[in-house]
Structures are given as C-alpha cells and as structure tokens.
Image (cartoon, rainbow, N blue to C red; front, side):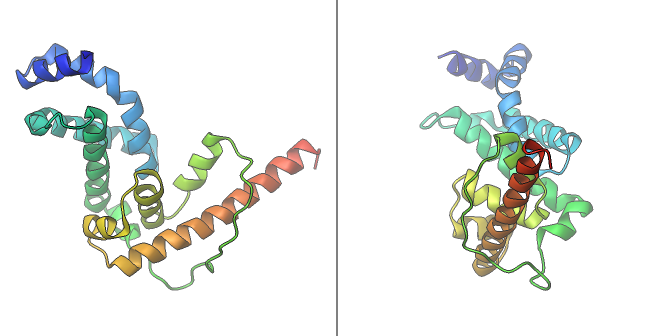
Length: 185
C-alpha cells in the first residue's frame, strides 16, 4: 500500500515521494546493479541512471505486477546499456571463443557463503557475467538474452555454459582455499 501511495505521488512529480521511493528500493537495486559492474562506483552510476529513467517513465508502470519487478527490469536494462556505452566493458561484452577453458558439467557441492559466490560471479569476464546474471539470476530465456544483448542465441548459450564452467572452477578453488585455512594449511 505504501508503495502505491508513493507511486501516485511520483506521478505528480512530488520530489519528497521520489526521495522516499529511492530510499526504499535503492539498497536492493544497488545489489542488482553491482552484479553487472566490476566496481561499486559503476554500480552507483548505473543505479542513478536507472532511477532517473524510473522517475521519467513511472507513468508506464501498469500496476498489473509488482513494482519491484518493473524496477528491476529497468535496472537490468540500464546496466546493459551502461556496459555497451563504456569502452572498458564494451570490448569485454562479446568474449571470443578462442583460448577458453573447456566446458565442464561437474557440479561441486557449494560450501561458500553468498558473498564469496557473488564475488566469483563478478570475477567472470563481463560477457559471461552478464549472460550468467540474466539467465541464472534474473530468469531471462536464452532467446530474450540474445535479443537484449544483440547476440546470436548460440553465443548466449555458449557464454552461459562457459560461465558455469568457470564458476565451478572458481568455487572449487574457493573451497580448497577455505579448507586449507581451516586445517591450518
């Protein structure tokens, strides 16, 4: 109910309501932005750009679904636009197939806390990180990702598969590091 009232006030361009809506959702949405960037400053830039879009286009929210889902979609789209716009990401978004690690179907038992897992995801090359986040976390289908990133669907599938393989390797390495620390190694 509170969000509905804030949205109505934001539709009237009330700055206080915009500030409250921002305060209510910014912490969670910063987490979304952070998953697509390589540092906190870029995530904060994405968050700011996205909220500007939210307030400019809040009249497009249909209220036939949760506001947070609509907001998350804007965050993700803004993050992808940000990646394309900034050269340090743009060159990494399309990862070449040459010299990549082999694909593995192994599934290690995960014994990491969520912070370590997020850091493993963020350490992936940008293209892999983006595809992995869109598919595994946001729930997009491969075809949707291909359209969104302007890629061939086979490239999307390949990047997701290779991201998984790299994550499995990173997780295993993290577990070895954790085990060696706990056994005094």
